[in-house]
Image 1 (cartoon, rainbow, N blue to C red):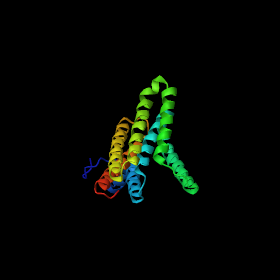
Image 2 (tube, rainbow, N blue to C red):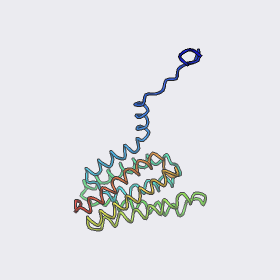
Image 3 (cartoon, rainbow, N blue to C red):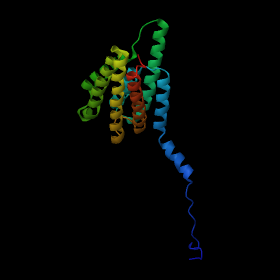
Image 4 (tube, rainbow, N blue to C red):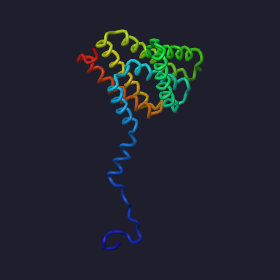
Length: 205
């Protein structure tokens, strides 16, 4: 040992700066950051919240039917693009379009397909997603038909329920990718709390 206490020939280890470690830690949580940004954007834009709830359930069902967790993000993006395009076409033609009802119809079709075509070995994966799609879709439709205040509370609670569904899949790492489950969980939680508060305070009336 040398007088400095460092063995001769030893190579000093350079520890990463605390700032760099913090940045990497934050970047690992990018789905949460995207979820926060999406929640702010949707709340600022007066979004159709029942459609958000029904769409989230539809993505889970689609990923379960495909049997690939990695398909969740393409399904999410594809659903957003398709529904925005459908709404724009309906507006241009002057045809009324209730997006929540449209997605519930797609979910019913997917659930029926699952009941007929799902192999027995995958029923435990696809079945719960199909039931969840019908349940959350029904909540979305009820919220659309109710008064703004009651509908806001219903859809807000529905979003919080779906946040619990996201957390379940995040912990088990099933059906959808963990990044999608994390993103959706943060988004649903923030939207759920905000919509309930807005409804109770009369801001949605």
